[in-house]
Length: 268
Picture 1: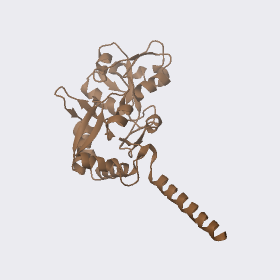
Picture 2: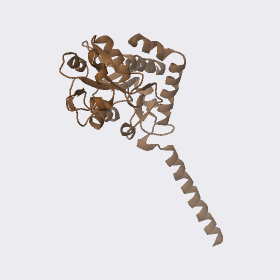
Picture 3: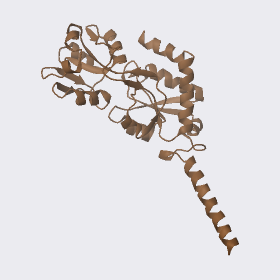
Picture 4: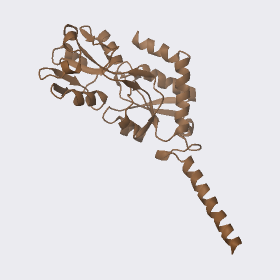
């Protein structure tokens, strides 16, 4: 009897160990620590499926000829090249970015801010840029809109694009101002120039570019944004193998000057 009990105990321990090993290898969201990584899928498919909105200069812009361009487009092309595959771009929008990424893509790029809400459904790579929200206004009005309190007044016309961190920031902080959600993130800055809105609060990096593209608009203290933010790339939740590959590629691009060269191409 003692021998049978010993054999049964060994069998139970072995079964539990196997179950624990299986659980350890299976990551949240269905990814695995070894075989079955999205990395293998991309290599086998020969394409890297890239979700991007195409409405956020200088990171991602959808041209009239149907091509994408920008900092993160060049970076996605470089990532695909490192894998020996081609980048296949999937146009999305800020309201549907996360859902489209989960359903259709291997990576999402285009000035994507890291948020805890997005982190619930995706992993992020290491950040490649520190950013934050700051106002952009007509140059004559810079002194009027230095603080959140100065903006959050009943007479202020705030304009914001839908579905992303800009809209979330506006709704959270501008409860007294007149906030208008404008659907086109490409032409939204023209609304300020035309006098149809007073201020937009967006990422400091975007305000610096838009003041160059739209003489008459000025970025307000871009070196001292209202809050801390980071930009990174979204990769599948739970797939540590793919995340580590992209992280290592990004680490090298940041260290060897490749990212700086691409960024300077679009910002300088």
